[in-house]
Image (cartoon, rainbow, N blue to C red; front, side, top):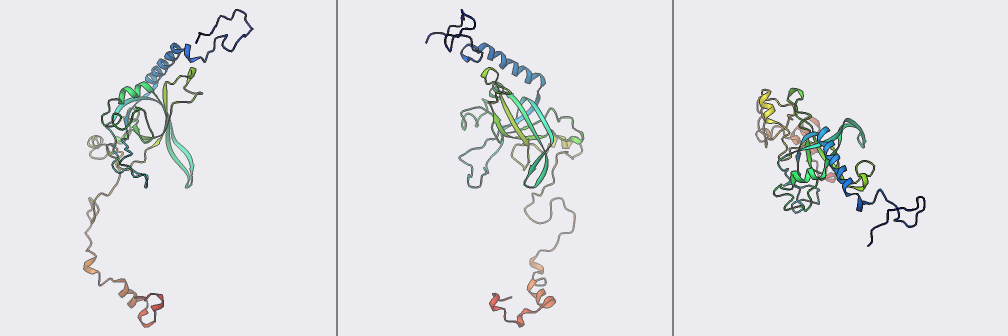
Amino acid sequence: MSQPDYSCEYPGLVQTDETCFRFSDKSVQENERTLFSNWWREQINLYGTKVDYFVNTYNVLSADNFYGEEPTKVFAEPRKLILAATLNENAITLSKFGFESDDDITAYIHISTFHDAFYTLSGVYDTQYNVVEPKAGDVFQLSEYGNDRPSSRQGKYFEITEKLDQDIAQMNQLGGHYVFLLKAKRLDYSFEPNIPFNDSDAATRFEGISGNYQVFEDSFSGRLSGGENTESQGKKAEYDEYDIDNISREDVFDMSVNDTDVYGDYY
């Protein structure tokens, strides 16, 4: 195929569709797109914030698609990245339960930056996925932004809900693809493996109390963990004394004097 003629010998006279230079012709603007790519990387590194990024090692082979969960899911060890983020704290959203106040975030990360950080992640991208990209379900922590919060609070955790590589109005100058646009919401923490939400180091610094520490119960049965109250007697020991049928017969109404067979026999 012959190269287009951009000479335009007669200004104002368009002889063919390819007579004059077209700004959006990607075949002749590789250098310009490289310039934009470098510009994006520079802006993110200059004005971005450092985060800890946790890759969700979701595996379709062990997932339970019937219940929509993956019981063996764990998160890979975090790696440091720099994101250019816009944080919308205390965002008001309308749900079926009414108005809810939550945090959401929009962030940019350079495509090459993410690839360089995670293409060596063993057991994830080399076995499960062919493309090294962020995905919904990954988690990142605003570790740099929140590293000096009072009372040992940690930086907030966010779960990615959407990843975009095309938004012509914001990030695809000259039709190029330079960054990923990530949208995330505040992580609803539920003891996901390898997410250090209850920071033990922070707890040590502040006399055993971590600002992110949650009250939870992990004992199998019996008295609550750490409880000091007198342990109650077992149910078997006083079962006969507090049998609901006996109490009903003695303190409410003795239905044995009535014919309750039609109702399935009261007692």
